[in-house]
Amino acid sequence: MLLISGVLGTALLAGCVGTPSLGDSTGASSFSALQEMCGAPAADYGADAQSVYSTFFDAYVAQRRGGLSKERYCAFQAAIAERYRAYRANPGPEAQSAWANFFLDQRAQALSWRAAVDPTLRAG
Image (cartoon, rainbow, N blue to C red; front, side, top):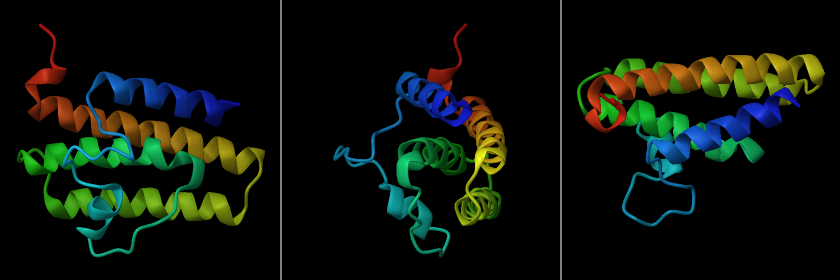
């Protein structure tokens, strides 16, 4: 239940900050392109793909606008991929809860990085 509510909350936040959807063809960087820019093959995040894409995209905006180094962006992606693999290797309620808590923290971090460099996210 926690993961479902977290994913739903993330999806709602993503809609508010202008993150493209996985199937979007507006010219935004694709999910696989964001992953490949760090030299890693595109990972399959299953049902969490849209939420992970939103998180990667927000961190990418921060990176592209100078608020985050490419190395830190790639380390951020790698940490998420590693945690997701661990969760999928041993699924269960505890692993799901740990993944959800970790991912929500990462989502908040990505939004914070983006807000620091994207004036459309700073209401005044």
